[in-house]
Amino acid sequence: MAFSRITRPLLALMLVMLPLLGYAATGDEHRLNLTGSDIGIAAIVIFIIAYLFVMAEEFTHLRKSKPVIIAAGIIWGMIGWLYTSHGLGHEAEAAVRHDFLEYAELMLFLLVAMTYINALEERLVFDALRSWLIQKGFGFRQLFWLTGFLAFFISPVADNMTTALLMCAVVLAVGGTNTRFVSLSCISIVVGANAGGAYSPFGDITTLMVWQKGVVDFWGFFDLFIPALVNFVVPAAIMHFAIPRVKPDAANEVVVMKRGARRIIVLFLLTIITAVSFHNFLSLPPVIGMLTGLGYLQIFGFFLKKTVGRDIRRQNNLSSGGQPGDIVPFDVFNNVERAEWDTLLFFYGVVLCVGGLGFLGYLGMASEMMYTGWGATTANVVVGVMSSIIDNIPVMFAVLSMHPDMPLGQWLLVTLTAGVGGSLLSIGSAAGVALMGQARGQYTFFSHLKWTPAIALGYIASIYIHMWLNAELFLTPIK
Image (cartoon, rainbow, N blue to C red; front, side, top):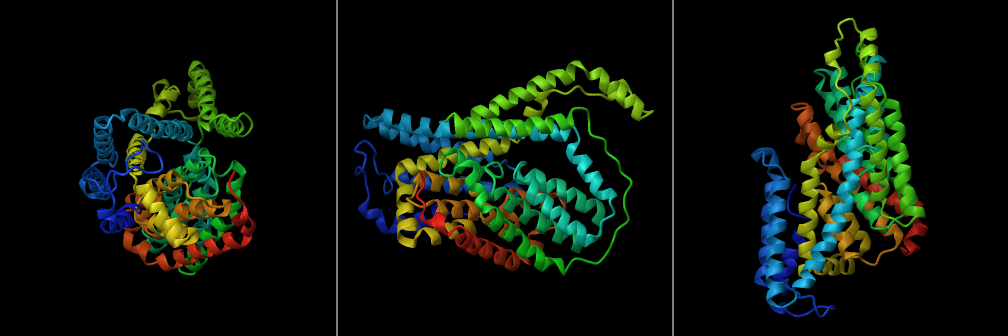
């Protein structure tokens, strides 16, 4: 990660416009333009310092949520003080409530999705899939493609980091000390997981934000399926020839899913259907449907807990060493507790920081420079490239806050580039960072960087394929 893709152009532009900007009102007579003020400059500096701490998380071990939460409080505290001193305290209050409501909807949506993923993990669904793959005795080249494609097709439902970790566990189990196979497979998994998340409203936080904002409807994201597939297949096809022609011995590991695992999968799918239906047919926020789906899991969890005796009898039948004390009754709140709270709180800090900078007037400046000066296509392609350096969450929230006047095809383009651009570097996505830790010494920043040109070819090809296949969408205004 590095400077925010918002702050870089803003700092340069701010130096030019500093003498021209002050406390002048913008289009809204109650909104102060503070981009050239001491408070505005201080807010930019605070945000950059916070993000430098986020960048250094791997070295300082300071969780990324902590600096951005502090930065958000300071930025909005300065805004509140200034607006209150001008008798406009209500304006600042209304603005921060708006940003907080947007965060709350997305946070609760993600919390339900994470709870389901944790429940599936607790029921050994992912372990069973891993053991099945290991038992089949696939060759390295077969496993390279199989794990990549599974990452591409699982990440639209599960998050890209969970998917990548699952597939990497398979690669490490069969690859052992074959560094070349492990490294190339990890690269393929990262690219596949990020590409898969780009064509589904549930695949990535950025696509979820675009969907909940109402910019693209649920089915509209699937217009990105072929471009996303091209983004994965092009670099994978190039790397294929570097995979060793070796067939490792099949393992005998057998993992049996816990009782209720298949029914939880069905409930998860039903929850997704409920969220989509609430949004499409009832004009209600998708989060209401997701929280209803959490109720499905709670009721089923109550059933599993009350019938825990069946688990005890089942274990005694399967394993002579099994003891009643080995059984831990299913508890949905244990899965809620295991959600990625650092990510959820990081999301809070980013949304409030970017919202504060937008309230100060910086997003309007960035929108004018990028989408008016550069043009929508160039701006959206640059958004994707810069997402390989920093997290894509702040820039997508910034783009949504700017809400540039773009046709549907351009909104899908920025959704695609923000999602797959993180694959260009290993530090550009949560999946890449997680795998560098899981496959330490075998999958590294420089092993990924070696194949960045091939990944870039996939990135460019996916953009051209989208602009060709979905050409009519570039003439379709958003509703």
